[in-house]
Length: 96
Ligand code: SF4
Image (tube, rainbow, N blue to C red; front, top):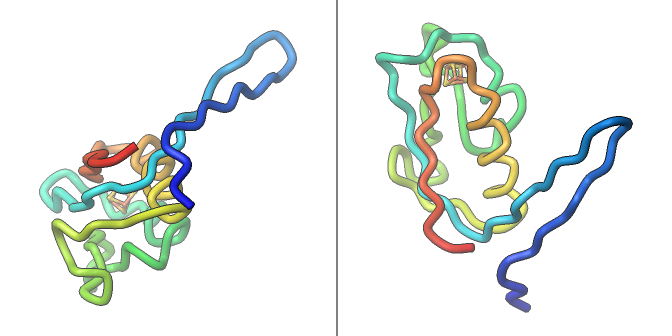
């Protein structure tokens, strides 16, 4: 069942923030920016992998650069994109 947009407000002491849930994203990696920190392929190994020298790449199994990722996995991709220290993860929300 397609739910659409869901907003969840999370409360912590002295602050609150919201998390936006997305349904579908398009993923790629800017290898020139990647610093090989390993965060993305440690956190979301279903989508990202070490290309051999520590630089991240989108797995061929999911379609390589430009692959479309859906559902819960899309949410995890979005989260790790925000955490990437170099801004090398390029993630386009194409459906909310
Ligand atoms: S999180 Fe960013 S900098 Fe770290 S390996 Fe992945 S793309 Fe590279």
